[in-house]
Image: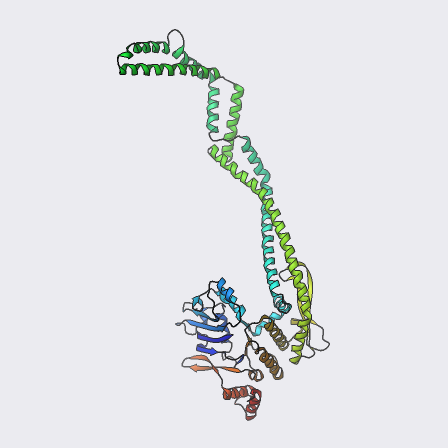
Amino acid sequence: MLNRLHISNFALINEMDVTFPGRLSVITGETGAGKSIFLEALGLALGKRADLSALQNKTKKCIIEAEFETGDLDLRLLLEENDMDYDSTLVLRREISVEGKSRSFLNDSVVGLHVLKLLSEKLIDIHSQHQTLLLNQTNFQLEILDAFAGSIDTFKQYKLEFSKLNILKNKLSSLQQQESQARKELDYFQFLFNELEEADLKLGILKKLEEESSTLENAEVIKNNLMNAANTINGGDINLLISLNQVKQTLQAISKYGRDYLQYFERVNSVYIELKELAVELEDAEAHVSGDSAKLGEVNTKLDRLNSLLKKHNVGNEEGLLKIKSDIEEKLLKFGSLEDEIEKTNKQIEKLAADCHKHAEQLSELRLKSIKSVETQVKELLSGLSMENASFKIELNQLFELSVSGLDQVKFMFSANKGGILNELHKVASGGELSRLMLSLKALLASKKQLPTIIFDEIDTGVSGDVADKIGTILLNMGKSMQVIAITHLPQMASKGDHHLFVYKKDDSDKTVSYIKQLNNEERITEVAKMLSTGNPTQSALVNAKELLNL
């Protein structure tokens, strides 16, 4: 429950510290006195957006602090998941600097706004005047139905699976678009790959082919020179080997007379052997050289193809072509993997869709079973609010496809008058009727969701004094199991509270400031009497106020 709200430098409030000791607290005051300001301030503490205009004094920071007693609420897991220590007392603080920067704290530890918002869903429900518009929203209607059906957890699981299903469907769509684009390019890339594959690319192939082409083109010159070189070394009656052999024999004759002479001999002998082998190799090379024009044409064709590919792909060597070939091969393989990924994703979608359908059918069954109970209880509450002839029905229609709400489309149908035609709320209900219906639904919803605190901002708008008295009784009954805070203009409701706060304005020097105070019994009598009359309260109004307050 909300124990305390401290407000500093916010809107019309300079400094305000409010406690809420009772189970039903009422807040009254003249229009414009600032009754709703404390709701706005509380909203900031609970994570709503802030701006610099909230500061009354632009030279001081704004501080809003709300203290909650969590009681039996299980918030330990939520806090631990957000790296916060658990404590049964939670102090939420929001600070807005003079520069407009906002910081949030939970028990003096800095915390993100998303954590405050998560906590606020567990701690409090603030019903403002415009919330009657929620009655026409499917999400709110389903929340009520699921609260009664006990299917809130099932619905959460369904929404989680449905979200995953949509993510998978988006993924599939993206994969299919990629496949479609890849299919358009597939033939072209396959052609490029085949062209490079046929070129038999290897590192150094270009240089090798250029040398081979040069050899074939100059075969006759090469052949003659090789033959002349071989003959000079080992041909005819006078050649290098004969002369070198004579040198070798001369040195061999003196090799026994000293180590140096022996080394001369060995070196000449080594040269002799090398020249003899070289002559054989030159003869062999000459024999293999031929001016094969067919072979030359084949080599030049390969060279032309390689040079054409280099120009086509704008690279300078075969290494660049090999890189391009590898990239194209990767694209071709990716196309195959795209098909595999599409097949895999389709199977995942099929399985998840089946799970979603299973949960959606469970939801439909649970919701359908709960409809009669909701209708009956709402009818009873409306009857107690002077709407004995009101009719309330819930239509649950089946959808053909899964939606965020499952397979159900819900409609709240209403008629305020006997024999009236049931129709959607916004078409048939007045402001006062909507307020009473909303209170009935909120009262039932609060009991099911077990929220510790609920705040009503002028839930009595558009209703008479008698109905206001009955609304007050409902709030009083709600206060037996939870904390209820009600902002009201009507004395019948104000008299129901066991804790009465009065908001008023006062001009201080050059500005108007809002104040709030807790009324004692005498002050309550006077305030309720003022609400019963105009101007100064009459004696009869004071008597009537005492009766309302049971004093």
